[in-house]
Image 1 (cartoon, rainbow over the protein chains, first blue to last red):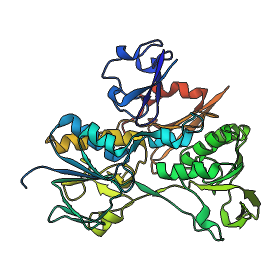
Image 2 (image 1 turned 90 degrees about the vertical axis):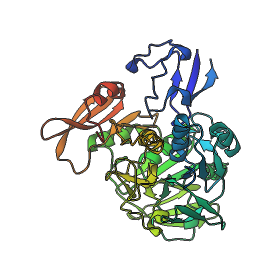
Image 3 (image 1 turned 90 degrees about the horizontal axis):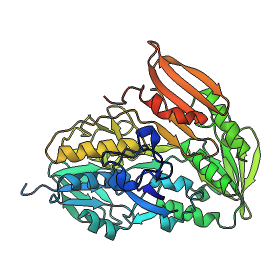
Image 4 (image 1 turned 45 degrees about the vertical axis):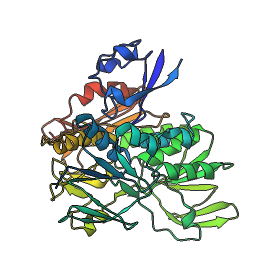
Length: 55
Length: 384
């Protein structure tokens, strides 16, 4: 499981938690998230995230 | 004009958001950015929780100006300030004597920290954190210190207080209001947040204000309006931001609280745009990240030839206080209505409804933050 951080606002997407409130189940790998998904805190697109941690 | 050229003044999140969005739409259009500082890209919201996340100032810098130049194929003038805009000739006079011409200009100049009018011999020692360079100075000043006073219990003050307390500092926070986040939260929610932050070790001095700050050896003595005297090692001011409007003002661009724009983020000169902390869009000054994302997309599309008004969805603000997770979407202060408070086992939900019963704002604290998405979906857009 990995973590990805929004470069703009700092929101962290943790694969083990997912983003269930926006239809992304816990355990969803980063590659499987649709490109249309956007940062729940600041609205930027998936491209503006980068991997911050492998756990 | 022989060729389209875009100049962006400001290299903060707003300036970079426009450069990035425009580059996505158009790989050729020349973009020049003016930066008053080093011009590197970083996430400003990360400054107020960097102790908790273990980040040094150097680690917060995502990419320096050279890397951003390569990544976005833009030209960046670092440590360069604009002095004057010549609207008639679409030219910018720089403080270093240079000139730049533009076909479209984007003002993304941000805001200045407000400074309280205090007396005493240590006023100039009060720090504030508004950018990465400030934050570097703040972290250096923190070395070996223990007791910190924060002036202002707003969003930034509370976030820094929680971050410092979490890292073992003794934190006092002083505010003229009766509660933390006085402009964002109804009374009951303010009390809830206060109690959680107090339980995390933060000491509040509310309903008072700082009058003077004097040096006492390596420490500072603050005298408050209610005659309380407190001594600390370091003082951080976080009493709010004021949009930077001087450049616009001196060149005849309309300014109210911020640089006045229409829904297209255009000033009265349709070739000059403004966004972010410096802008007043349709009467709203919204110094948060999410409006920048939406504004930058609209500006980029308009510059690229498709006139696009900005649409702001509901934009709740997340307060990064781990001692009390808080999400708030304050109602327009002019709107009549009332708060309905639902105190829960380990949280608090406050909903603001207008006289017709429609949800117009909310505050969610603690466990209630889990209801965010269901509640946000009931809010009207900020600008439809």
